[in-house]
Image (cartoon, rainbow, N blue to C red; front, side, top):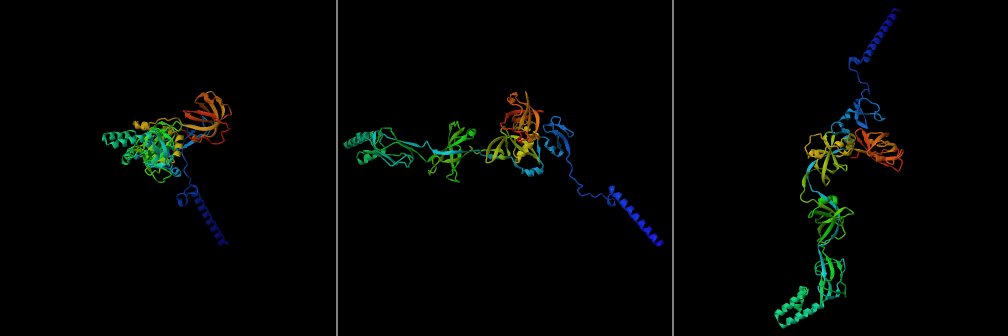
Length: 522
């Protein structure tokens, strides 16, 4: 019994020691010492991404007003929006900050502004026509009768010297007989005078030679074409009587042709007489014909507002036919000059000005206003605003432009005129205020203001809401009443939002019917 009691006591003591050890280890674990007094091991899923730090809260409708805590805007019944620290770069200076992930997802490309020799060119459409300077008129030199007309018709192409008609000239016949009679007398002086009279009557030298050689009068004279070309008109017929000076035919030469091009009047300064031209016709694929500007007609077309430019093109083989269409490229005069240029796709044209986004640093892009020159082969000359070597955004810049418009940076784009005058860095010109377009419904009108229930404006991060607007002119709301569906444009003016245009829409459009708002229009 004593031995069994001793074993029980030993077992109980051992269990007590184990319990005490387990309790001490558990207390150490809970206190953070961890096993063997080491650092605590991280529990799975305990690590989390660092929270984004909020700099301040703001009202999207009044972004210049900042608040130190969230809540509702004191200006409108809407929640304030946080501005995070990782977005602060977008507010610094006049540049837009874009994360590397966004750059990759946008497929953003940059290009370098290069100094190149640009050969300006104008591409227009032209029509092939006849050269009106190369025209021959065939006339009767004396009274006569048409004995025969050779097989000719308007539109035929003939060679120089081709016979047109046989004509009997009674006056020439009498003069020839008189000359032969005088020559038979042997009086050389009288014979010379009689021969000269034949020439004065209009006889061709070839006819006088035949009379001399044959000693016989030539009753019928064959009238021939003085030059080769197209018979544009043929007014002689068998049996008709002709008088001296009667026009028998009109022949147009084909050795050269005119291509009449229609050049928009806006490009009139890029065209000059003597300018080289290249022509491409569908009839001769892959072949480039060359000519030069022969004339610029002094009148512009009142209907199409284009100038008529004549390009003279050699046509030795007669392949070019009147009426053919041609693609005409008018090359710039001279060899061109070296200018700073960028790809045309890098320029954002707003109608009133042109912008490019210059790369300031990795992920930072600054809008710059530029003055543009001619565009040649996909590159546009930059007259002012950029220097050679600067990098500009060539693709994806429209999304950057949207963000810049939201932040109001596009209205601070540096003007090239200020840059050229050497003004201090950071001076900016204020362009026309950004305008936004959306739809809504009239709630109330009150003189110089109007209350509208409008759709969301994504460009300003506005939800659909009801708010008052100022009117640029009191007469804008004339005829409008509560409940009218309208489309309107507005701009920021200080702390106010001013409606610049408003018009009633025929179809009803509630503020939640869709998101018709667009980005800022500059």
